[in-house]
Image (cartoon, rainbow, N blue to C red; front, side, top):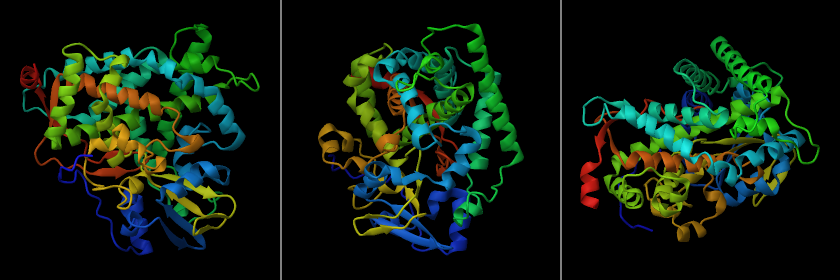
Amino acid sequence: MSTETANPIYEPNPPEHLTMRESFAIMRENYMNAWTADAYREPYVVNKVLGTQFIIVAKPEYIKHILLDNADNYVKSPMQQTTLIPFAGNGLLTSDGSFWRRQRRIMQPAFHHKSLMSFADTMVSATDKMLERWHNYAGTDEPLDVWEEMTHVTLDIISRTMFGTGMNEVDAAFVRHAFGVISKDLGTPPYQDLLGLPSWIPRFVSRRAKKVIRELRTFIENIIAERRASGSEGQGDLLDMLLNMRDEETGEGMTDGQLRDEVITVFLAGHETTANGLAWAWYILSERPDVERRLFEEVHGVLKVRAPTFEDLKAMPYNKMVFEETIRLFPPAPAFLRKAIGPDRIGDLDIPAGAEMTIAPWITHHHHDLWEKPNEFIPERFSPENSKKRHKYAYFPFGGGTRICIGNSFAMMEAQLIMATIVRKYRLKLVPGHPVEPLSKITLRPRYGVKVRIEHQEALAEAAD
């Protein structure tokens, strides 16, 4: 591993202690800022609120036990369901038990490695379309918000791969607006959840969130109805695959309602989380020109002036390591919440029935016992030899166990292809003085976006040649 010392890209500054009132106020505004310093030092932290134990687990062996070894004892927490169910319905993100296993069996083939390979050209084409627009900004003082740009391109990609065609500007603007409202309004945990109160006590959902959720569901339902009515099959997009998939055990497919919930789930996972990861990557590369130069030299050495393909990814390992280290520092989903059905014991930790468990990639990925220089950006951590030394559950940006994100391979391929397509043409430089701060709601967004100026790569290309 590189021993070069660099300034931390973003260093968590957790408080040593918070009162309950302080903790609740912070959690509703930006929940990861309420995790105290002991969470980054200890294997677990236990707090008790109104008789309910809230346990933050950071030790990889304990995380593996919860997510894999004894996963049946830990269901989706009502705290997380309050956020997800209003828009994701009963999809993979929210369902449990036999229904979740059935849905996973039906959907898994659509995300098989061979299925995903066919989407690589679409990902590159959508990125090239974005770069045509960037040409007007290159070499000027006109800034771009690269977080918004990554949101646009990943939404275009998921639309093309899901429905076989890109969205028009009106529909794309509506979807971006809908997810923005959902993230802001549903990403603020209600006091009932923070106090561990029963799920039958009503939780408030804003009128505007209800409105955009109704509109989003209608939008997706109309697309599904049009595809069913047209009878068009064999298009090779994800919707076509999901319409025709059957449960290998029962032979049943999904109802339109189930299909709608899964399409909305894939839409969120297929553009929001990858867009966030890419935005953080461009911020980091702007701060670390040494890394950006090495990445360019690798990409340029493989591609020269042509576009990347799926087959090129193996020849660009540093590209992958850069993104893996990015989502270590800025995991797209900073926390997963579980509720213990029955009592359990993990090592010296006793877990009572009803305990609320927080498993936070953000904490584990920054834990001082697990990572050397945890707040520094060191892509070499993810070289094959260094990865072999690490516990599998010390790094889990896509979750773990049987419920690992079904689209993780899609997201990794998409991110690498977008990064290679962009870096071969342009450098992105953070606008001086622009504040960059992680905001944890449903996903980990940059609170103020990431404002950059665009520069051409000709000089580096000439030097490399």
